[in-house]
Image 1: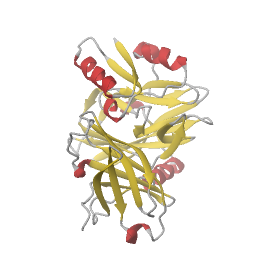
Image 2: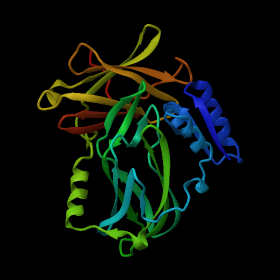
Image 3: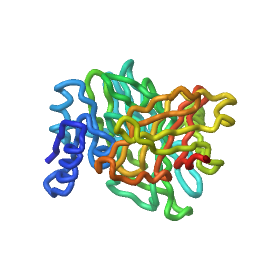
Length: 318
């Protein structure tokens, strides 16, 4: 049985938690949901009654005949290709093209939608799978903030080997969400045995996609100061970025904040009057009685020159 929960508050999160414990429930969807429900269900944007009908019947039979290593309809074109091999891992790529106005989602979808997911059907010599995400765009639609991609996306997947001397074999169920006026989940199978091979042009596109990954700043000096304040009866996170780093060539266009724990999430992210200072609301299912572990805050900074990511922030020096 699949369950659809409509709402975005603490009550809906509690219902999701209860449903998750039931052995009769296969999958849970929450519309529009929040950062907490995203950890245990799939958050989906409410755009049309068709969305509700689609998701209530969301099961393997809902997708018709599953395709292997490709999917194509009048709006979405997906192909799965093998790029190159190394001792430690084999690199594959999903080439995704979308017609105008269609979009798909980043690893943190935002207020709605759901990021790509996979389930291993069978594998041999497979240690782990890692997805490399290009820097997303931030869209503002129907009062919701959405992190994702339009037109095209090259999603890089690293399949790491248990033993470097042996090749990897696998078969996976892959699930992605796409939205225009309506939202549709697309499910297909990716299989190592008959994956298409890239050519010189596509290898270059894969390399370009890898270069678009957000630059990890976590190993450099901590560039962000943060503190929690109570303003107008709301808990707020004040984040200040080092001028020396961002004053060179970078202007912060968008900031995405995620907490690596489903009990806390951020909303109402906005700039203050200071150039590199942001204020956001801290939300918790435990009201205001919570501890914010600053090491669990993940910042994604989107600038004109690319994306940057950092986990954690330091307390301000008084």
